[in-house]
Length: 156
Image (cartoon, rainbow, N blue to C red; front, side, top):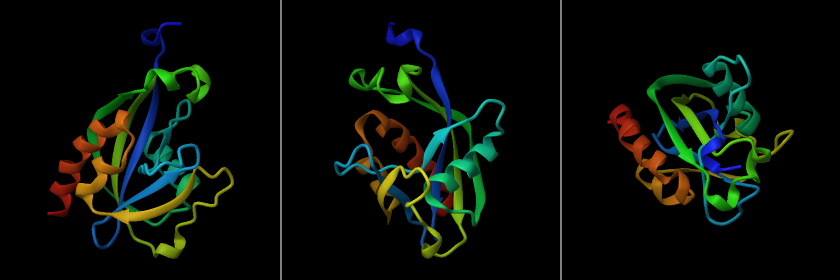
């Protein structure tokens, strides 16, 4: 099947800011190079986007104590590179169309637990907003570059 015939997967992404306005990133189990990402995931059929965001956030990080600061009014999209088409998501999608949420983490770092039932991450850390585009895989870099000014408009 041609890549363009595959649909985009509906997803959510979460920018988590701590009390120092640093951003949560984690290293994926399936890509242990020095690449980090913010939590993100798919939306289930008929699932509300906010509910999907909270579910994904909890499934990946165990975080519950958040306040939603902003929901981006546009969708951000990325396409998988050719070598990952047919591998990721059992070959059903060519990329993702994501609704991004910016949230404030109201808990303590000890609440964060990436050793979940189905762990996606092997390690996590807080980083500066400007460092986001430097840590992500290349095919998602444009999304992180779009998110940086959105985050800065909130924290400045």
